[in-house]
Image (cartoon, rainbow, N blue to C red):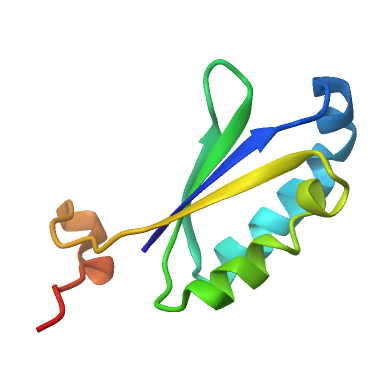
Length: 99
C-alpha cells in the first residue's frame, strides 16, 4: 500500500484552474481500484491519496500522469507501507509481512 503525498508548489489559483482535470484523473484510478481514499491537507498546501498496489515503479508511473505534476503545480512524496492491521471494511487490502 502507498501514501501519496502532494505538496503544492504553485499558487492556489493555478491549483483551482486544474482541479477538475485532477479530479477526472483521481476518478479514473478509483474506478480501477487503485485509490481507496484521498483529500486535501489542512492547511491547504497539498493532498494525500491512499493507494493499493505492490509495485513502486508502477505507482511512480501513475503519479507521473497526474495533471498537477505534469503542469509543475506539485511535488509527490511516495511512502510504501505494509497494511498488516486494517479496519474490517478494509480487509481486502490487508497485507502480511514477508517471510
